[in-house]
Length: 180
Image 1: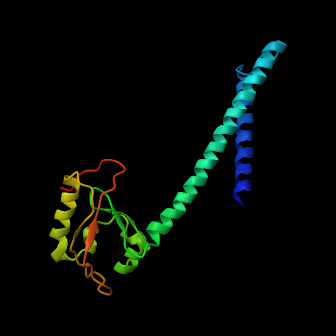
Image 2: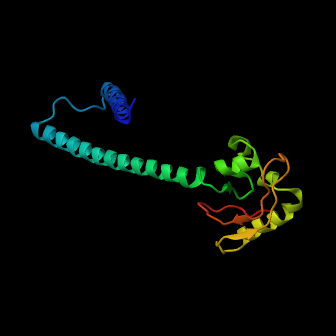
C-alpha cells in the first residue's frame, strides 16, 4: 500500500468517525435545528466551507512537515547510523540511549543489547576513572566544545581494536542531571 492509499484510508476512516459523532449529537438534540432560515443556512454553509479550507490548509502543512521529517530521518540515518566512526549517545545518568552500527560492530554487541546499559560497561576498568572525570567535567562546564580523553575498550568481548581516543561533546535537547 503506497502513501496515497494510506492517506485515503485514513481520510475515509476519519469521515466515518465524524459522521457517527454527528449522528450521536443529533440524537441528543445537539444537532442543527431543522427549521433554520435560508440566511442562517447560508451562514452555516459558509462557516463550514471556511472551516474545511482551514483544515485542508492545515493538512497540507502537516504533509509538508511530514515530508521534511522523512528527509531529515534519512539524513540522520546517513550521518549517524552508517557513519564510518562510532557514535554513542549517552544520557545524563550515563546510560546508552543510541548507538550507531559502527560502534556496535567495534564492540561486538548488538545495538539492542547496548540500549539502556551503562556506557562504563564498555570501557576497560583501568580507564573508568578517566571516563568518569571527563564526563563529569562535560556536565559541569558551560563549554560545549569537543574534547578528548584516552580510554581503552573493555575486554568483555576481547576480539577487536582498543580505543585510543574518546571524543566528547554535549548536545542537549533538555536539561539533564550532572553525573554524581
